[in-house]
Each structure stands twice: as C-alpha cells, then as structure tokens.
Amino acid sequence: MSVATTLYVHEATLGLIAEACAMTGATRSRLIAMLLERSMRDPGMEPRIGRLVRYQRADRREAWRTVHVRFREDEVDYVKDLRSFYRVSASLLLAVAARRFICEIIRQSEKREKSDNYPFSNYLLSRETIDGYIFWKICWGFPPNPEKYITIDPAPLE
Image (cartoon, rainbow, N blue to C red):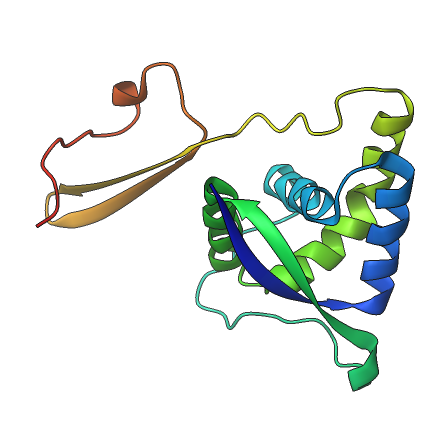
C-alpha cells in the first residue's frame, strides 16, 4: 500500500530530480524515495538532540513547488524518523540528498546496476521498560530473527 504526501521543494532541487528521472527512467516518487533512503546510510548525518528543526534557506516564493509523492508505508516511517533524529525538514533532507547522491543513482542506472538496492524494507518498533527507564528500539528492515533484537509482545493494544 502506498501513502500520498507532499513536499515543498526548491526549483533547483526539482530540476536535479527531473533530469535524473529523464536519465534513469525512474518516476519522481521512486527517485525521491531512493534519495531519502540514501540519507539513512549517510555517515555525515548526525542525530541532533534538543534543537529546533532546520529548514531550507528562504528564497523568493516563486522558487518553491509543492510536489506530490507516493511512498510505501515503511518509507513514510523512515522519513519521519529521519526528520526527528536529524532535526531537519523532509524537504531539506531531500535537497541535501539530491546534491550528494543523484550522480550515484545516475551512474548505477547507466551501468544497468540495480539503482534501488536499499536493503531495508519493513519497519519494527519495540518499547521496553527497564528499571523504570523507557527504551525504544527502531529497526529499519526485518532481521531473520527479530526476537533476538527486540521484545515481541503479542498482547494487542486496547
């Protein structure tokens, strides 16, 4: 199942994405998802605690576009997590990712390599209370033995 959402994207970023779509044959939604997925693996991105969310620099109103995107359900969760952990807007994440990773996606496409080789699909979330402290574990993906990594509580929420 897919989820429809929108991003507020600068025309320069949208131009990069449009060119990459034309060169790779990927849809805009798929390319945007691929770029954001690569942000998850980017070692240059550091979590930020106790700070306000950062947004892109202001520009004239005409330079911005509302872009409709369809994500898989797990991709929506990844993007929300990225926004929360890195404390940046999804649009800023996309702008940074477009500049860092678009050439990689195009090169992979030209070599006929699978350009959407993102290893994560599915999403696991676990909450544990230990000694009165609450621990949240988030797993981007589905390991072969999830019970090894997270507590699985079969009790439903009421």
